[in-house]
Structures are given as C-alpha cells and as structure tokens.
Length: 196
Image 1: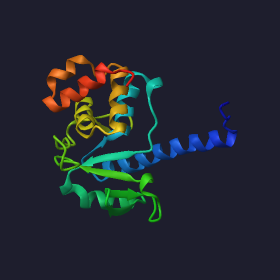
Image 2 (image 1 turned 45 degrees about the vertical axis):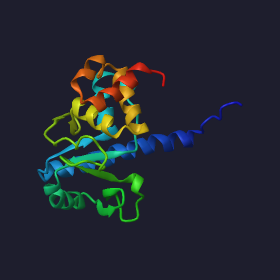
Image 3 (image 1 turned 90 degrees about the vertical axis):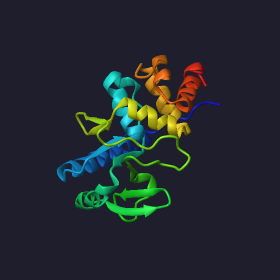
C-alpha cells in the first residue's frame, strides 16, 4: 500500500499544532516566573528540552505540557495563570490549566505536585522544583529527576522518553547502579532491548 502524501494544508496544520504547544508552554512558564512562583517543566516537554541541548535533530515533539509545582503554591499559580488567560479545572486526571474554558484536556497544562506520588502505586514521589535548571526558555527538571520520574511511571510515553535519552547519550549503563532496585531493573530492561 502506497503512503499517502500530506497536502500543504496538512503540513501547515501540523506545524501550527507544534507551535501552539510551544506558545502555551511559554505563556504558562512566563506567567509563573513573573509571579515568582517556583516551578519546573516536567514530562516529555522537559525531556525534549534536555535532548535539544545534546542533539537538536533528535528532539521529539509532544502535545503534553507538565509543570511541577509545590502544592502550597497552587493558589498563587492559579492567579498567575489566570492573568495569562488560562482557566483552572480540577478533573479526574488532576489539576489542569486550559487555554479557554471550553478547551480540551489534551490541550491543557497539567500540574504535578512536587514531593507527592503521581499515583499511589508509584515507588517514588515527584522531585522538588529545585531539581531543575534554567534553560533559554524555562526552568526544566534535571536529567536525573526526569529519569526517576519516567522509570517510576514507566508508561509507553515514559519508555519512549527514556529511549530517546539513551539514544543521545544522556542515560547509559552507568545509571543502573545509581537507582533503586525496581527502577534499575526497568532501565536495564530498556538498555538490554534497544529495539524493543
């Protein structure tokens, strides 16, 4: 079966979608910085930022925006993000900030609370916002914090993020001995099956 060609309009929509996510991330992080709310970009957006520092061509686009906050700063974050045009929603999937009241949850900024487990069955709690550094666009979690979070969650998206970090040399065999046993076995599994 021959692959279908994308029309110029489809390419434009794809580029526009990527740019929309980038603008949403920048609006959210700039609002938090202006309000002096401690935060760190987490998840696939943070992984992409760390990979971009090593090999820009290996960067994967993601629609997900996860921001790590301390629970004590949530009210200040709500005020800051409301000023930037975001609408707050507490849903089954957590604390979300939408670009408009009728926006879809997939177009949200999702909040992860520092020092708390994302799910009850997780081995580790999320790191603190201090486990981050400033980049040219935002504060981003350290590679170590991202590895721990990804190995803890270990969903398909997390495994893809980990494989991307392995592929560009941010993570290697030397990490196995630095991790708790459950997490080290997960990393070893990924290192042992590079095509898996």
